[in-house]
Image (tube, rainbow, N blue to C red; front, side):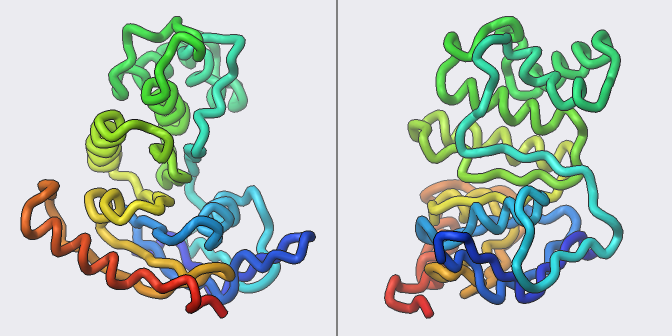
Length: 243
């Protein structure tokens, strides 16, 4: 079932940058799709257009069965430094006027799901980078979205933290039957996480390749995984292929 359809979407900025041109793809419910491409190719812009944070300048963004609830995880954790993890996670529920007691209960469950039950009353300054990102993911999930958008959330983390969060994200995707769009510039990360990889051209961004990946868990450094990485890397366009 098609959840989202982008048709010839374009975006220009006031400084003259043409971020996207003729960006077109469909997204089925339940997919884990990575948007992969070089820095500046419009991946984050595409995510913000889908979320409704920016308007397109051309083309169409369609929701065949109505726009679902959306959760957004930014590259920076964007936590409120003056309050604790529980209150940060509860913020979307506060905005929905959920009663405080019920909001606290749901926020506590969300923190437990990302392994931070013991840090509910810790402030952001007391958390590591990986823990801050876990709080951000819990905040995105607490309102029970059907579509989860993530904008390079693990780019600044060390490899062990990044690998652990990759595994946790896959678990949450399966448990909640989510649809995910994940922005990354890492071939390895897209190969490990995705059911499908959309490779974007250099700016102005559009789809250069649409790669469906085998279903089922993957083991890093296996022959099968290395072949998936090779296929994705081979589809990346060179910088001089920009229009």
